Image 1 (cartoon, helix red, strand yellow):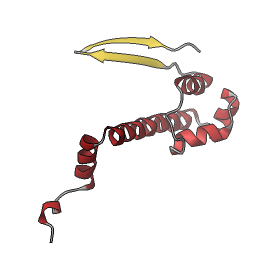
Image 2 (cartoon, rainbow, N blue to C red; image 1 turned 90 degrees about the vertical axis):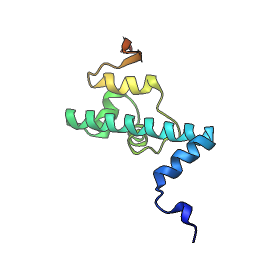
Image 3 (cartoon, rainbow, N blue to C red; image 1 turned 90 degrees about the horizontal axis):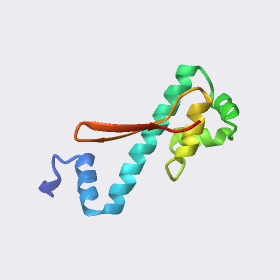
Image 4 (cartoon, rainbow, N blue to C red; image 1 turned 180 degrees about the vertical axis):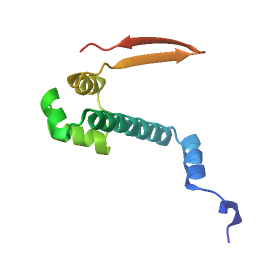
Length: 111
């Protein structure tokens, strides 16, 4: 029996793989960012009481684009201009915030 693996979790393995492989680390980080964007878009749709199809119509994009973002089926992060377009179409402003040492700079993307 291999005792060195007793008590380890998948999170331990992921942490080890992230240290060993920059490509794996980048893939994990991108997956996390895609999940955050998906969650935000779903929350906004829920708050606005609109379906994917209704959002697609407002933003003038195919409904499948919204589905790919929300399910994480896209291979890459949504482009910032596309995400901004989706948010703007239902009245939200997209902000970019840069923080360092407790100070921040922010800017709003144009509609």
